[in-house]
Length: 115
Length: 118
Image (tube, rainbow over all chains, first blue to last red; front, side, top):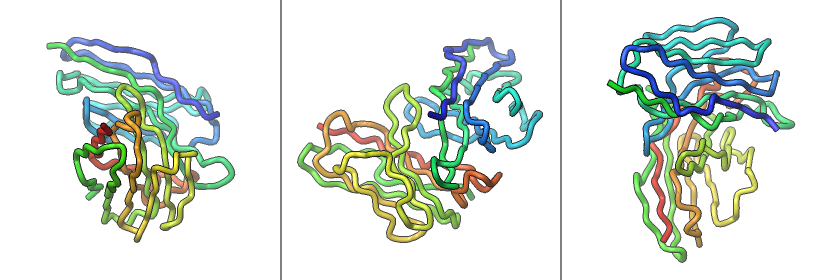
């Protein structure tokens, strides 16, 4: 069973602070890693993807990947109330017995940014 | 353009009805996915089509019947659903669907169809 674990949350930070979201995964074969943001009642929206060890920055978002530790994180700098949402960590791994990729999701971390 | 469209946005149906959900993408993606999502849970994979062939069926009840008429279109036919099938149904697509490649396997989600079964 391929597992993806996220820090359980909920996470609450003040406006302007750094929000830190963490994720670990069990399948060492995994090659690609994603963070999706999901507002209540809406569909998941891709905000970051990362494939290599290290950091990847996009605006206020930084994704970090450590394949040796099987660990992915997302930092949100200068958090805004509009960042309040559920953040889903997703790991792409080949499906059993094939090369077809599929996403394995964590349970999500609910983030609230208060003014 | 990374747009996946889904229709309808909302659907209310009785347990004896037959209805269909539709998903469309024009990005040239060759893998398309159906997910079911209940409140406060992550998306749950139902079906995967790769190059218009059903590649993954996650033991979904037969009252859900997927169809991929062409590389841009994915349908989910619904019949004799139960109230517990009420959920957000999400469609997603990816360029190749190959888990061993890099950036080609990003999944883009449509806006979803909110289904209520009475």
